Image (tube, rainbow, N blue to C red; front, side, top):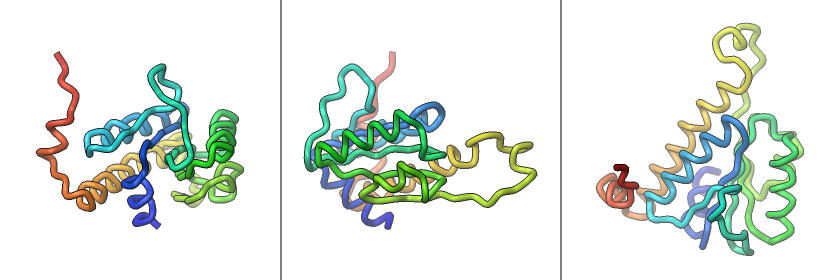
Length: 157
């Protein structure tokens, strides 16, 4: 399944990433790394983000997979004919059912979890690690390296 994620992302003319809340923060980090690998990636909701077209890939992160904004984004993506990769903690969610490709990070119920990892912390942490692993696979598939990524890294003053 992850090989298919890498394939879709690597060959997409444009990649769009969406998430709300803390999932959105992880999504922004992922989009930044995609750009640093040499791909054309945007964060949905930014003022400079172009429109999604057929052939593009949209990557949505949503722990619950039920947020209105994520589902509406998925509906637009499907209407436009783009591929939709969904990363969620709930494989039976509305968002999961809209996916072209579903990546589910499900965690068992645990009474201690709220004490150590409140709300979606496990999903968000795992999502960051998984998206970084996807970046590593994209680097390998494209023959890129950390050195080539650094050349595309934003220069902060």
